[in-house]
Image (cartoon, rainbow, N blue to C red; front, side, top):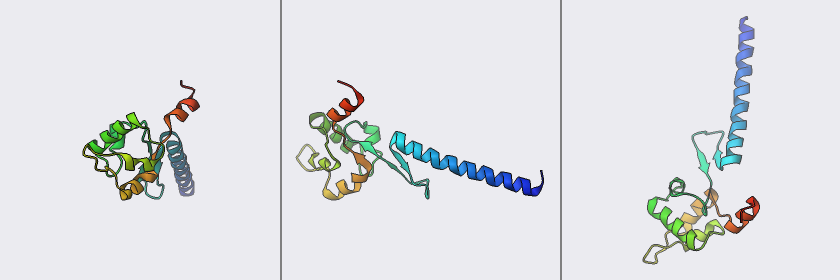
Length: 126
């Protein structure tokens, strides 16, 4: 293979790999809820459901540590979240809100809150 052929092969391989990267990122976002910014692959958004996320998943969100994660889990056991803004109802033992308006706004694009009844109906579970 001459230089021109090698250059063409390298360009075709690079084009194919970039296509795979784009398709892989879209597939990952569709299946897992992880959104990858293709212009900066180191930045990603992890979108979770407040009603089903584990403590480990919740603490991946900015501003949520183990204490707030456990408060979310305790709150949803009594009253499931209908929308992200329901985080304002989560309170510490003394009654102080765990999330102020600024914190809720910062998390709004990173979380979802599907009603458990709707999820069960869609998935065919009783």
